[in-house]
Image 1 (tube, one colour):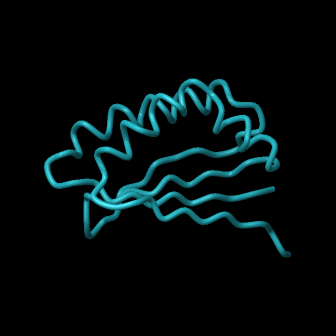
Image 2 (image 1 turned 180 degrees about the horizontal axis):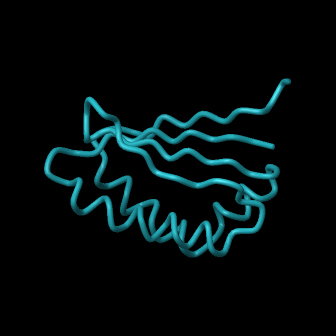
Length: 96
């Protein structure tokens, strides 16, 4: 099992544009991507312009397939354009 966090910092005034694109990405991923256990977007309580995607995947192959899907390839550049700085991406493997 692999867990991924993708923390994004949305530009001022762009949250309302960011959210529908993210929602569609979450829905398409959960519905269509084999190996996806969890794919959810959370908003920071103290800073609404900080959101983090919490992902859980069966294996690296599932992640690689997800990164090649049409819904990801369409959403990622749009979302990145709405961010003030690059995404902080962390990938974790279970130890215990």
